[in-house]
Each structure stands twice: as structure tokens, then as C-alpha cells.
Length: 592
Image (cartoon, rainbow, N blue to C red; front, side, top):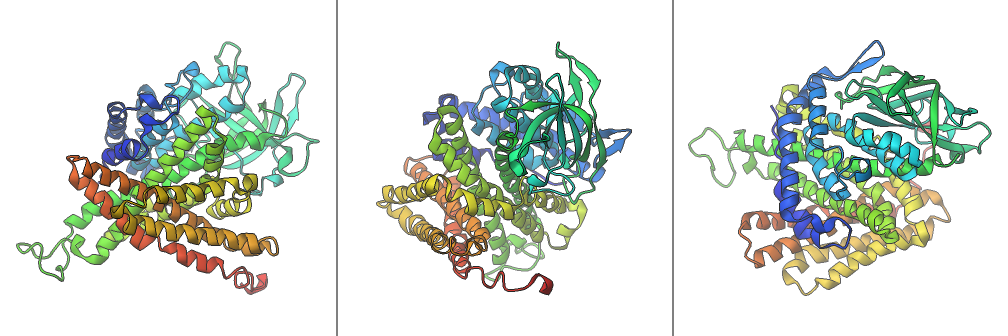
């Protein structure tokens, strides 16, 4: 059976040594001392290992079943969901006015990681509910908040997001779902939505669907889309559940992975819906949910790589094959463990350096969300808006790549289901697709985010990197191995941005053909910055005489690997971008 231990030491290192959360001027952060965060994360790790991990294979093999319009979740899921609710894990950063604990979003993010690593499909039920909560909290009326938020906070009711239709995914302007106004102020919702995660299940008393639809007579395209609350059961004025609404599940999709989560076709047949926010402004409200979800999906990418890595390391230490070319390391045995071989080491170092850099990047992004929301900081809002497609796109591309790399360590056993490694690769694969396929993330980054507010936010990022390098240039231990590679990679990224400026207006394809490379280039620079910050913190801890020298020395060595072996990929991506779109667009469609 696969193993998993929450990486509490690394999580604590990031929160306190790197991000210094308790010293930041963000409301609520002053309470995040080491003892408090340790207690929370230790308990989250315990729930992940003892409750969720044993159900991961169960969910994968059993899947969900549809019986008489009701979806049955895998064995043990209902009991585990009760544990999550009773422990308050669904309510960590929710508003205390609606039963939440009011903790910062960074604590929600950190606590979610072990749950995702241990059982990604299961955690999606509460993850989507959190997104629905956020959309209603930001855009709903007071009555809507009072009606829905207390139950969503506790996950007594769960939530979904309904965007995609059979004929339209990314291009939501093609949407056909209609919302007919009624005399009582409600709307009758009719249409079909597909790929709805947690669209129907047996773990909650009610399911609150957030549905995008068009009100007849509204503007064409995305400007005519509105957002509606469509509950599975209507809610009476006293808060009790009333009649079944006109929403039903058509089928459960047969998927490559995340079998434990019910991905449903949802049919709306004149269902009663309640408008959230203004008419024809639904995309604004839905993006509140989607942007949060995209950071969560980025976390899913590296969290699956984390558990795959942990198992690969254990296997590499146990599996005996061949001898170390420099001399036997297990002379009393028939062979040495495969971890002695340089190519296995390379594979594991690729995984380790990515996961630890990705965790730092995601946590930093979560603090930007806290600063934007709690401090009303427009600059932080702009920076996390810029980073969101990178967090989602780059971390999920690499998360899948390294989940597959961990599978490779097992050789033939990695391809056999009983070892569990296949599931991590299969589950990680969806992260590159949902919440906006990664090609769309790249187009969003280059086509929209770079020019947002006159390029203010990307320039702020370049300045942030430049300032970090300048402030630490007297640190000789940091300079050669971390600052110099970071400076070179940042220059590559700026050169790519300059290419887009000089060529993109004349031929937009020259920019868009390089968008995917730019997203990966920016991801590498972000992880390079995170590794430089981690190395600085680790060196400071060693200088201060901290006792766990092995942890800090390992941290520095892992960072050196990333800077030397991974970060130079920016030069390759720049070379590709500089070729423009000619070779990309050379063929006629008929010649593919």
C-alpha cells in the first residue's frame, strides 16, 4: 500500500523562515505563531494519513455509482466526510459570521495540501464547496449569504460550479443554457451542463449549484452571461429543505482518474434559480470562484507529485538492482539499492526540487490573496492575478510530469496497479485540463495579464526579482549558486516580453505561438526566486546555530540542483519564442 507523511517540517520552514507570516502586516497573521501552525498542520497530516489515504485506492477502484438518480460515493467516503466536517477543516478561513474560523487563506491552503496528496478525488467535494462559498460571500445578497453560507461553511450542503456545455467549454459565449425571468424575481433555468465535479452525491443534505446561463434579450457572447444559485432542494424561509428542484444528474462520466469524485452531466429542466450579482455580469462573479480554484488546482499538481515522490524514494531505497559503479554500497547483499545510481538520483532530484519550489510558490500566492482581500491591496491583487495562470499551468504540467517520473523509478512495477503509482499519474493528468486547459492559461497570461493595467504588474514582478538580487548581492554564499542564475533567467524572461512587444502588434501569432513557452519560462523564474529565498533562509538558520543542520543543508543542496539543472530551461524557451510563429503556422489545416 502506498505511504504518505505530511511534510510538516518543510511547510513550517516556508511559513516562518521564508514567508515570516507572523511578522506580516496582514490582519490575522499575527496569530500564526509556530506553535499554532504546527498544531494545525500536524493534525491535518494525521487526518490525511489515517483517514483519507486508506480510502484513496478504494475510491480509485470502486468509483461512484448512479442509482435511481442518486450518486453513491465509494465505501468509507461518507464517514471520512463526517470527520472533515466535525474537525472544522471545511471552515478554516470562512467568515465567523457564518460559522467559519476566520483564519487566513494561507492556513486553508497549507492544511489542504496533505488532504489533496492523500486523496485528491475525495478532497474535491469540499474544495468545490469552498469555491461556491466564496462566490456567494463576495457577490451574493445578505439574504443569500444568510441562507446558504452557514451550511456551505460546514459542508452540510456542498457546492458546485456549472460552466461547460456539450458544445462549449472555453468559449462560454456559445452557451445555450437559458434563464427565464419569473414574476416573483426568480428565474427558470433550462439547459445541460457537463463535467460537473461533485454534481451529485450522497454525502450532503443539499447541493448548491452555481450555474452560468443567459437571460433572453441580453448581450451576445460572454457579456450576456449571468450567474445563478440553483439548489438541488429549494430552501424554505425558515431554512428547512423544501421541494426537489428541477435539476437532475443524467450520467456519471467514465474518467481516466479521480474516480472517487462524481463527475456528472447535469440537466436543468425549468429549475428555480436565484441571480447572484447583476444581470449579465456572471463572469465577474464566477471568476471569483475560478481564480481560487486555479490556485487550488496548481496545489493539486504538486501535491500529487509529492506523494508520488515519497513513494518513489522509499522504493529506490528498498529495490536492489545492480552495483554502484564507484564501489558496492551494500556488500553483504546481492545488489545495491537503486538510489545509488546517478540517473535515479537525477530523477528524484528533479522531483524533489520541483515539489519544494512549487510549495513555496503556492504559499506565497496564498499570502498575496490574503493581502489583497484583508488589506485591500490593489498591487497584491494585480500580482496574484498575473501569477494565477502560472501557478495553475506550470505547476500542473510539471506535477504530472513528475508523478510520471516517480512511476518510472519503479520500472515495470510502476505500471502495475497494485503498487499505486499509476493512480497518481492518472489523477494528476486532469489538473492540466480542468479549470481552464493549460494552453488557455498560457494565452491568458500573454494575451491579457502581461498588458493588464499597462503592464504594471509584470513590471512589478521584474522589480521584485531585481530588488531581491540587489539586497542580497553581498551574500557570497548566495551569489554564485542562486543570484547569478536567477538574474540570467530573469533577463531571459524580460527578453521574451520584449519580443512580444516588438512583434506581437504586427503579428499576434508571434506572441501567441510563444505563449506556452513563456508560461513555463515564467514558472521557472518564479521557482528560481522561491529557491533563492529558501536558500537565504536556510543559510541564516545555519548561521544562527539551528540544531537541524541536515534539513537546512539538504534544502540548500536541493536549491542548488534546481538553479543548476532546471532554471537554465529559460534559455531554451527564449530560443523557441524568438523563432516566432512561422514554423508553427506553416502547414495548411489539411496537411496535418
